[in-house]
Length: 217
Image 1 (spheres, rainbow, N blue to C red):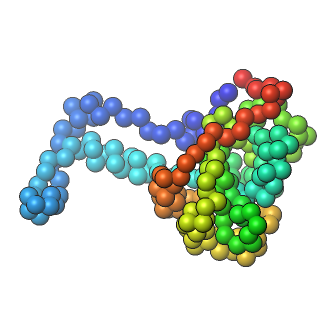
Image 2 (cartoon, one colour):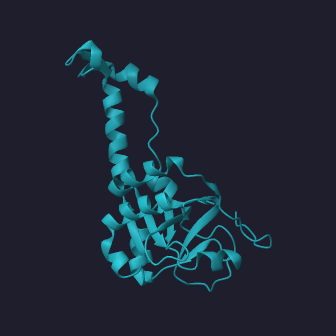
Image 3 (cartoon, one colour):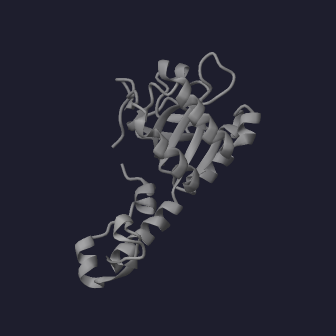
């Protein structure tokens, strides 16, 4: 199924060989360690252009922070493919064409801290028939392109995630993530800090739709 995100937010595609042949190269001062500071290295103009394009693209990147209070109950009941959200918050998010929804909750048996649960692929429309009333405000995601973090409840990871997210959304913690305090845009600066920390976190495929659920084309 088509997704407005694909056209509005697709990553730039650049043919580097063609770019080099058209733009050539230009001097680029670099410090190359043992070879001495200030040595000039010829860097293609197109490389500079590519870096600028990607920097601009990444600056526009936005994901979603979602506090999933009923995570276990929803998965057990097969409530997969959508998340509750207010109409106001949903309108704000859809206009930005997010890529991912990062789901969190309090670690079990703890009143403090934040545990990363999953990375869900945003969808503008349902990707399967869902047992919700038409017009219900909901955030949709595609479980087939999503992942969960099974060991993110380990103490070092809870501390790491909590520290990063609390620094960005302190008021959400004060509100205990109730209502709209549990849904926020994750801008490029936060993602640049947060995502690299997850390189060592094991991932698993997100649970699929119940077998009886019909997937839409």
